[in-house]
Image (cartoon, rainbow, N blue to C red):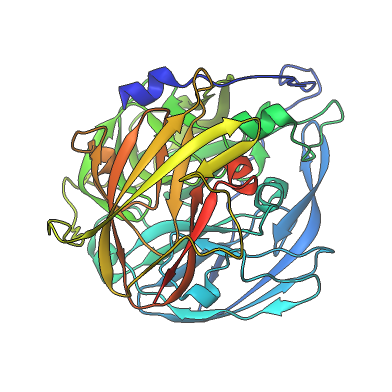
Length: 458
């Protein structure tokens, strides 16, 4: 993990950061917005245009069932879900369920296009354990722009085991979602998506950070224990999160659910698409800032927590959780390698190839386990990071740079950060469904310029 913190070097070319947080007109401090819950067996989403009002201006935006972002979809394991998703935009898009084990025809990748004015009706059973996932567009060549405009939301799964644990579980009260995104604002206080060639290399990194669509919001809390579900919903930024008092907090879950053992840390690193759940205790009246560093860019204070009341509850921080990954010990498992390479300005490949919708990169058998090796080949002095994501599965990290994975990588994952020279070996398991799925870099500018492939389960 220390290596990840220290070696990231990004190329900053031609940046036009005309907005600055220090201008006198900016008055942060609005309450932290909490996305509403959307639950039940029949769920409706409307993809729509909107506007996002911030202290320094108003931006045109996209949202699900609103102006920006979307509701938190909350379901239970074994539920059978039917959805009606209406696209009221003037352009096509898709809705991908990031981290969800779902039939290929309802995955929401680039093959499941929702044209302007159309309604998509996916249906599937929730067939995995409790976890904090998310949803976002995945249209070929347009994923980055659509996510940037605001199309994203959390997707929470509950199950009997998570119910049995003594954890904060009052959504929006002591169980708080945090969707963190950076945006590039101009002098008028609005953001538009127009990446330069340099942005395609380094990712589209903003000059201000939003939490749940708000700039430097405030969250009033009582003394007690709180659970934060944290999502890096950025296009391409790698975040390092800390608190202003350098306090230690407890990580209980990652991308695909609970860790085998909880972990005490003082900072978290999240690449785009990664999630963590943490527990924190507040015992005194105090003001605490949530701080963020964007690698290759700047640091930000992104949220203020004010501990002002005595109405909260305290919870023990569990030391262990139930986690039973698939067995990857067999010497007979199929092995595959994925070399992620930067070949020039805006040219990214996996195994020497760029994404072609008409090409299936490989096939595999249904209900099989495999071992995949992912390597960031780099490109000389151009130390470009990548983040490897696989659809339809939660994988197990078997080794990282030749060593056993660190404790934060010990649970189920669907996205992993690989810096130049890094090598991750993962165990993947695919069951139940057949069809075409994606693997790709989750730095969205890299994905849109071709750093993606597709595989078919037969």
